[in-house]
Image (cartoon, rainbow, N blue to C red; front, side, top):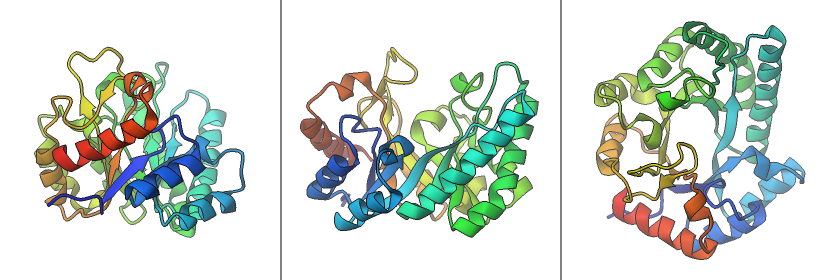
Amino acid sequence: MNNLKRCAIHTITTKAWDLPTACAKYAEAGVPALGVWRQWLEGRPLAESRKLLDDHGLTAVSLVRGGFFTSPSAEKRQAAIDENRRCLDEAAAIGAGQVVLVCGADPAVPLPEARKHITEGIASLIPHAAGAGVKLAIEPLHPMYADCRSAVNTIGQSTDIIDEVGAEWVGIAVDAYHVWWDPNLEREIKRAGQRICGFHVCDWLTPTTDFLNDRGLMGEGCIDLPGLRRMVEGTGFDGPIEVEIFSDRLWKQDPDQYLGDIIAAYLKHV
């Protein structure tokens, strides 16, 4: 029977709540883990954020987000690497085992070159990741974002990068919203195997009115989430299942009711 033992909720999902409120609400609802977005750490010492998590018995699964390696400017690429080092340190400070990478893209940079920037950026961070004890989790994004958010758009491309840079401190975060469409999905999940270190869920609405902020609760859309979960778990993945929803529609709801809807949808449709 499904339960909440592996459920994690990203703080962006319940956007109305700051970190203290989210911690209290998640813990009260029986959700044992969360994905922390970096802006939820602002305004307080990292040690205080870690204490908030510990006091509520919550585990930080991931820190979101690093990446953004691509730029025509070498100086900006180096600045991104430096920022990712800070992100890794923040993750270590709050006990998060991975930093989710939105790898970046730039309309001025051809995609093959952008992917080279990304591969080089990730490779340069591996020593710092090892020192921090935090994995770099490549999150392939839907190809509608290939112009300006990420030139890494499939699990297969993510695996290719890891084949080049090494798997010990680099993995793949599989987000249902971004990969469900891929005709090679099952094959590429099998190929990725134990490189998969994260699994994010929401749903794709029809029609979709906004390609960033119109995602659905699990079960509201067309993604076969149980089927995708079986594929991912077929690799041996048994980690947290992270609810990550961007929705102007859902963010307008009463947040307590919305949390209840998230939990109900998770239990029924994941």
